[in-house]
Image (cartoon, helix red, strand yellow):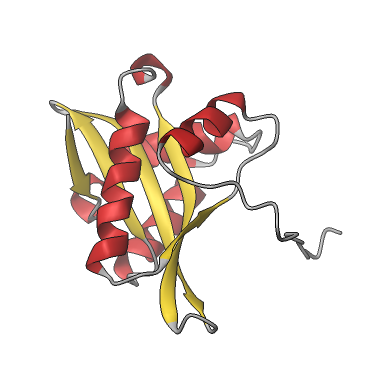
Amino acid sequence: MTILKADLFNLEALNDLFDQYRRFYNKPSDLEASKAFLKERIEKNESEIFMAWEGEMAVGFVQLFPLFSSTRLARYWLLNDLFVHPDQRGKGVSKALIERAKVLSRETNACGMYLETGKDNNIGNKLYPATDFKLMDSVNFYEWTEEN
């Protein structure tokens, strides 16, 4: 397996995985809109995306967005998206992508990474502690959207 930074050259393969990821979260398939979203993130350097490859086949990706901690005076990364093709699960792809995200964190002198997952995500709730993420029970996360 090889982990490479996503670029416009492999946008089609990334978009296929990204669309599957969105459908996993019960969003309608929209290849055109998701491709435009990813292209804009890459062109504007608004996220870091790494892809896992088995030979010529893209098998997973992780996308991180930059955040900053005012109290720590440092960058944080939000591990926002992590997806592995269903046929490739259980082969260490997720762990390899997370390890690459940790390298990014170190390379950018970030103080850490955040991620959020559903309480019912049994796989993720086993994976993240196994990759040294700690469950934060000392804070409450709240969300505001126009839909509320």
